[in-house]
Image (cartoon, rainbow, N blue to C red; front, side, top):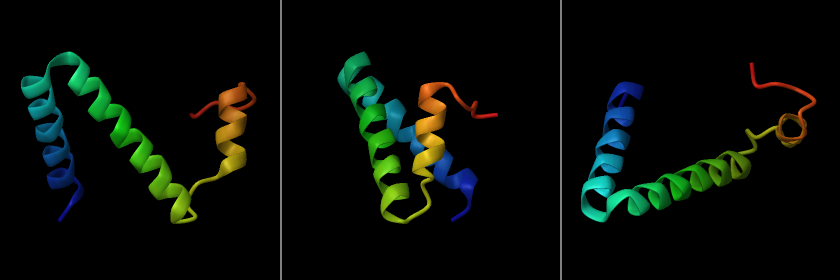
Length: 63
């Protein structure tokens, strides 16, 4: 599966959540997806905690 198919499936899921559960269902689903991605990166060891902390405190930008 390539990235285009994964992103299309992700968009279809969010569209389903928006139509089925309204705006708040869409927002809650997006929050859970973001938390899941964050936890997955942390569990896989691919998350730079110092970089996240620096970006949140304004010491470093994401670009």
